[in-house]
Image (cartoon, rainbow, N blue to C red; front, top):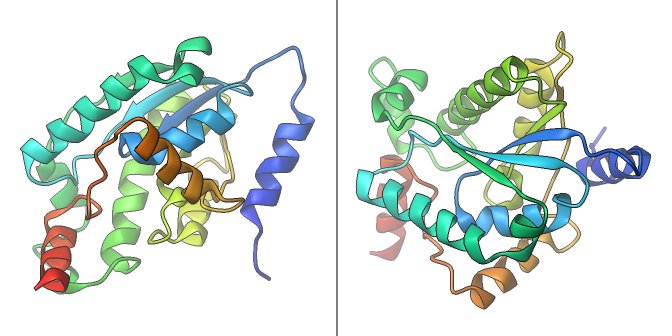
Length: 214
């Protein structure tokens, strides 16, 4: 049975009490991907953005994406009006390489997106997000990743659901690319002149992107 994660999210939003805003820890990979998501969710949740992306290569690219995200948040009305907060986690690329076990699985380097490497990367970053959310008493955790047409929303939602199965902190089901979410992120990126990278983040996706151009 095919899941409609967008419909599940819509049902959650409908059932939220009008006088309360649950705490949501939202993992974000970059400014463009978080633009529509924050516009969509910030009136429903007390949001803290969790920037944890040790997969991004090189370090200059990491700094550029983080800086772009910070500058965007200073201008974006939904962030300002709803007092969205931002947490920057430690950037240690070795943690990413360990998480995908690249030494024992060198074949992962040549995989296209949505393969084993990406699944492990999703799981690694979402596990870190969940651990922070649970430790700090967030009601929900989620990620902006599903807004990308190149990301597997089924994998992402299954990982999130599995991580929190015995916790009070719950996974917020989503498929943000649906209901024109991806299109809206493109519109907001253009409106705010956001830098839109042409690869996911890791060195392997960068190499893959470079090969497609050549």
